[in-house]
Image (tube, rainbow, N blue to C red):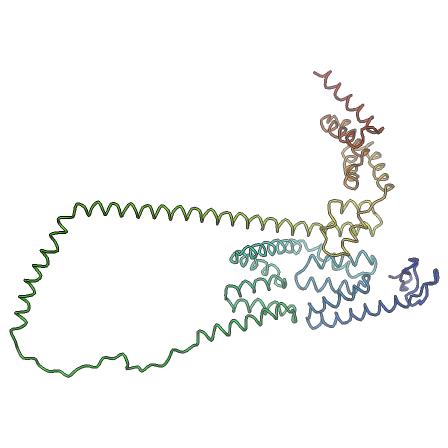
Length: 469
């Protein structure tokens, strides 16, 4: 942190006072600051190590040591910004934005995170591509988990075409190729991943697996057949010898003809006799075949139904994954908007920006901490917003309603805001909506003064309706 004169400052952990960056004792409470300096030096040492690893493209190794740096000093914005850059280089845009938003929150001024965030926000095409890659990657992951490798591969091909630096997508695509025994394509994906993150243990493990499997596959193909004598199957040819003429062949032909006639008579007579009964047997066989075919058709129909159920289930998983990805991206965008408003000292707008989010929407503990800080508003701030709505109602009922709705975002059971919305709708002659909001206000606390006023206006509207009839 720096003051306006550019002197480096830090905060005392006991009294939270601003003290000089080089001070060993707090001038306000006397706290010994030597431990703080030691912790910051350790954090910076890990940051420098992470920077060295990043320079040689050991990105996964850099992530480990940079996280260690932030464990010692979560306000080390240099380490956090570098961590965001590494995530961005690996195709993890949401994780990168998360780190930069946290960095911006911790150090509002003179922070490189401003440039990184603005660069991404200005490039709407890149943001759209990021959303597409997240959705398609989650869809591919769901398909792979459901055993539909073909669909997963198609989705992942689209992902890596949109974002070739998405290391996780390259690794998953390689894994699916390994499963399909397409080792050449798997090796290509892994080589692309390694060019981005040279020392990634997952990539290296997959490459070793591809090498082992490809080698064993080649050995099976190269196995030579056992040697055999090339002439072993050749039948030797006898020497030619001219036979003497004889009457025996003629005699054999005559005898064969007589025997053939006798056999034909013996065999054909029973067949001709039983031809009638044979036709009945043939019909029976045909019926049996039809029954078998009918059973097979029934089985195929059941199989088709089961396959359709699996397809429906997979489509639901893909839809859920898409929805989850969109929600995660939207939550971080709202958090970024909230941080900007909070740093501009507009705490109400900051709280409104994240009002639709939940703490569970954010992965890191730091993001959850920022959400809690921004989302928390005091009763005085709520009252100030309510008063702003009442002033706006003099010129615009619609504008006032929008402000009262923001009050309800921050405090969903705020009775006065509900009552004021009903009052604005009544003034707009929209009695149906006015009655709805008056009833909501009464339901919150039926015995309050606000509930009495709402009830009076509600009766007034109903009487007007009766008179109109």
